[in-house]
Structures are given as structure tokens and as C-alpha cells.
Image (tube, rainbow over all chains, first blue to last red; front, side, top):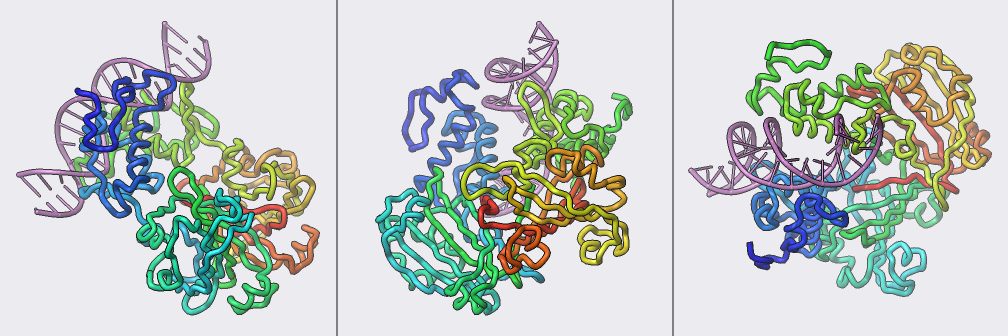
Length: 261
Length: 261
DNA sequence: AAGTGGTCTAGACCACTTT
DNA sequence: AAGTGGTCTAGACCACTTC
């Protein structure tokens, strides 16, 4: 009844709570606002990757809306892969340390058989000034400090991908070759565990090009071998870009798998 | 009250209607069954692409469930792009003759500027016996009759894609070069309008290869030019494959765009 | 037994479109 | 004004997990 008990940092404003369904033109639907508040909690680290968020009924009383409204908010976040529901257990913050997720962000499949986890060999990990093209993609200033990682991914011992990864230097202080080599599992898992940066979406531009001299060396092919050139920009909450990747993929024994629907 | 008035062909069975929520272990949730019944109506052509399906309240009374249950069924079909909701108007069967849809199935973007509609030039349209690899993908017998279409797609006058398309001969009787040339818009629009075959999903395998002599000629490049090789299998209702496409894409001025989430 | 998400209902009201 | 989908509520019961 009283305004804003403020026993938590996710209180609904009076204007929001008091407004009935669709009362004022400038207000979005209640469940969208609830969704925004939950997303804010995720972004601010109130609930960390892998942790359980409060139950639907808890959130409903906290936000002073019905359980059905919270449910619809969680439904959308869940369909956007930010949350994962588990019947009987609770709702959890999505994490990159699950086989299901890795499959979504590494879509190279062998011509025959099932996908296996690649080995990653770090070739380089250095700090440098941002080249202007990368800076633009990361919405950074040219000259800002970036981390540049270069690595080779091998499947069953066969080097298949050479990729360069640029990260904002401010977010990834203390990232070294050793840290990268110690961590087993996908790099995005390391990013969210150790650096609190959660990748939630990415755009890719895919082209066919010749390998070129350098990739040819690392991948042990001729420099005119056709390879997939995949440029990826990854985003965290709020559509903020946090990573640029440029990879060259051999596709004699593998293919990039995509589903259209 | 009485059983099965059968004034329509989408009646709920007694077993289904009589069973309360989650009554029997072998029964799936009510809304899933409703979804199945609606899908059946779509598949059997009760409502054709572009047409409006009955309102939620109509369907609710027809199936003897609450409006909310119908709503949840339609929600899922809508998120699978089989139906399109339009507030105030109704719910419509999705069609391939919409810009939004075409974008989903032709993901080539220019390096600069916005996507434009390509011109399609049919190079060949013939009936032939199914090669064994294509037959396998189409779940047909090797030796069955297929339609083979070969065409070049050009953007702003520049030939960019050479593709081969195989279709089951039985479904596409009377498909000729003239018909293909007459029809403006995406080929999938023609398929659903004239041949009653609605494509709803596709799997793609993407590789980088050399153009080869033939593609080099049609696309006016050297035969060792790297191109994207995109092999696509398209499916209609019930996961039945209805098309195999194999395209070679030039990617000097374009890229294949993909979103990971 | 208690707590969680999952399903289903019935009714109210809103926003948009067409008549 | 009438019809459509969109939102919100309150309550019931089910299925799954844990204690």
C-alpha cells in the first residue's frame, strides 16, 4: 500500500503500479515493463549466470502485479535465451557453459558424424591501439586500448579455424595467454565468469575468400585455398558491442550449419 | 453437448474434449493438441496462404476450450511464422509474398546500402531422373522424376548467384520456363500460389569453394574465384522435404548475413 | 509436504480496424 | 457500433523436484 518500500532495487514506480492496464498512451504494456526490470537486474548482476532468479510468485508480489504478468515477461526473456526455465526447480540465468548454447555460437559441423569440442591454441594475446575499422564496430574511439587475441581451433588434431578476437581493454584487464590456456570450455564462458561480460547476441557477415599467406601457414593449406571469412560482432545487454571476431574457416571436412525458419 | 456435431472438419475428439487439463499421461497439453488441429487445417488447405483463419473466440467454441488456450496455440504458430496476427483485423496464414519473409530466405546483403530485389534469369528447366544424392535428400527413390531448374540471380545487373533447384516432379507438374519467367517475386510465392506447396523451414550447409568452370562463365569471374556454396533442403508441413537448392554466391560485393541469438 | 514452473479457465477491459 | 487481437487478473489444479 505505502509507496516504494525500497527493500529491493527493483521496485515498480508508483506511476507504473498505479496505472491500470494500458492506462496511458506513453506507457508500454505492464509485462514489458516487468521484463525491463528483470533485464535490469540481470545487467546489474543482481542474479549472476547460472543462478536462480526469484520465483514467479515472489516477483509478482515484489512488483505488485499478477503472476500471469510476470510469467509473460519471463516467457519472452526465456525465448530470447536470457533465462532458462526448469520445471519444479526454478528459473535460471542463462550461461555459456552448456552444450546447447555452444552449439548456437560455433556452427561448424563435420561432413560426417557429430560435432566434437575443438582444441584452442592461443597464438597471440596483446594489448594494442584500436584500428579504425574495429573501433567503429566496437563503438570505441580509434586509439583506445584493445585486447587482440589470435588463435587456432583444431578438430581432432586438424587445424581448421584461424581467428582474431578484439575486446575492449577496459573490460578485459588482466586477460593473458595463460588465463586463456587454463580455462577449459568456450571463451564466452571465461568472459562471463571472470570478466562479468555476458554475450547475448551476435551478427555475422559471411564471405568466401582465399586463405592468404598467413592463414595458409597456420591451417596448412595453399594460400589460394577457398575459406569462409566470418566476421562477427557480439553484443551484451543494451545492444552494446563487446567483441569483434574475424575467423577463417576451412570447409573441406566441415560446413557452416544454418537453419532458416 | 452432443458428441461431434461435425459441422466442420476440425472437431475435437471426445477423448480430447472430455479430458480435463492434463488428465492422462499419454495426452499432450490441450493447447498443443489445438495447435496440431490448426496445423492440420493449414496443411489440408482449409485456410490458404494470405487468408484469415477464424477468430480466437470462434476457434474456442469450435474446439470447446477457452479462448486463452486457443490463444496459446496461435501464439506458438505465430512464433514459428506459420500464422501472422494483425491487431483489430484477425489472424492470417503466412505467405512468401511479403518483404519481411523474403529477407528470411535470401540473406545476401550488399556491402553498402540496402538489399534490393534480384532479377532471376532461368537458364534451364527440365524433367529428369533423380540423381541418388538428391533423391536421398528429398526422400525420393533414385530414378523418380524431378524438375531441375537452373538460374542466375543478378543484383543491379550484376550476375551474383548461380543456382540449381530440384523439385519432386509429382508436385510440380506443368512447371515450365515460361511460368517461372512470368511470375514476379520470389519463387516460393509461385510454389505456394500455383502448386499448393508451402515452404516453412530450411536447413543450409555453407562452404567456401572455387567457382569452377561453369559458374565462372555464368558469373563472369575466374574459375578459381572463391564462392559460397550453399546447399539448402526446404521442408513443408510435417517435416517433408520438398526442395533441394545448390547455389554458388559471389561475395565480393555482398555478404551472407546471419544473426546468432 | 512444500515449492517450483506448466496448464486451463472465466471474465474484464483496452487498442485497433472496419462498417 | 461491432469485431478483432492484446493485456491483465484471480483462482484452480497438475507435473516435477527437493526435502
